[in-house]
Amino acid sequence: MSEKRGRTSSVVIVLLNSIVIGILMVFAFVNVRAQDMFGIVVFGVLLVLVLGLYFETLAILGELKRRQKDLAESRWLEEVQKERLEAVVNNMADGVIGVDRTGAVTICNSALLSLLDTNANLVGKKIGEVVKLKDGKGKEFDLLKEIEDLNTIKERDDLTYKLDEGNWMKLEMVMSPIRNVYSEMREEEISGYILILRDITKAKSLEEERDEFISVISHELRTPVATLEGSISNLQVMTNGGVADKEVVRKGLSMAHEQILFLSGMINDLSMLSRAEHGDGRLRDEVNVKELMEGLFNRYEDSVVQRGLKLNLDIGNIEAMIVTNKLYLDEILQNFVTNAMKYTKEGSITLGAKKVKKGVEVFVTDTGIGIGKNEQRRVFDKFYRSEDYRTRETGGTGLGLYVVSKLARLIKSEVELESRFNHGSTFSLILPVKNKIDDTE
Image 1: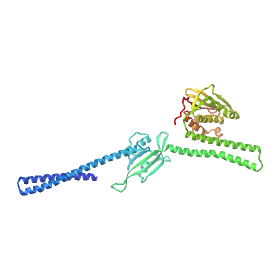
Image 2: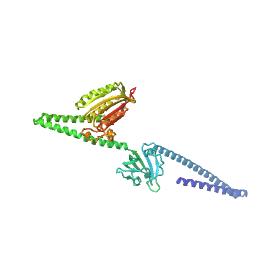
Image 3: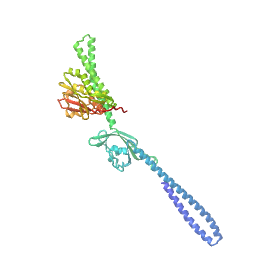
Image 4: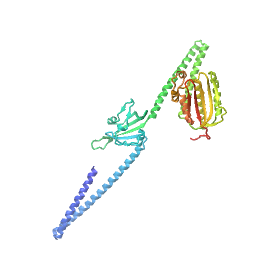
């Protein structure tokens, strides 16, 4: 504003000087033509004045030109700074949206458009229409009211944004007022607000999974530890008292041994879960399918027979080499067999392998209790255990098949399940035959 007033004043002075110079020149010219000595003297004085006014006018014009140049440079710098600011905002990974005091959007970056899954022009729209949120209690979150009462930086991490039907994104939002320190109205004035939005869906899910993990593991550990403590305490009392019935001791030791095996299995599941979550997916082991299945058969034959079941091997004359991660594959097949043993009360378990179009299919089939259709997809979820009372009779953390699905993806495969309630289950894995070892870092 002051720059504009100064430029106007300079133009007025130049115009006035020009008018005065013109009048004086006319007056002097008239006196000289009259050959009047006084007129000639006056002409000399006026000439000096004219020259003074002329040079003053030149100085004013020079100052005006300099100011115009400075103004042009200032505008250019302003544009450069604006472009730099827009470049910084648009290259931020978090969504940024600026609004004025009325709640109208003034600026937003590409990350915000991506976050909200829209290509619409949001500038000029009300913030409440652009970002429709709900709070942690599921109530509508009035964002405009929230920022109207904002005097300092505020954070919220309990907000959700609806992406589409049934899908919600969890958001963290940082809200900050924009203050004009050099406002003419007051020393500091809030001219708008800046909002930074971050997708924390994955982080929140991990946090919830962690809490669920701690809860489930604590619950599962409580029973075996209590059983072990009780069995060992009873044995100690009987031993110290000199009363040691062999049958009671045998049952106590047997119960303690079962719980130790359960704890060992849990530790193994947790170890494999860690490997699956952070595992090396390189396929570096050459495995003979026939030898693999025969080794698995020999390892579990006695255990299966002791349970009153029959173990079959169905591999025909298969001759195939696969390149895989032997540790992961072995863990998957062991899980298939132990699950079959756990949920099969009578009948048989079959270990098999056959060639298919995509490579080699390995499978484990049982004649156990089976899995209902409504539960077949969920059995691969972390911590999931069937509500079937027959399943509940056996211990478990619900991690086994979740780990299996993770390991299967690491060896470039996928677990398939076929099952009928009360007619057994078949878990299979298709392994592609590869010609070279994957040794990439």
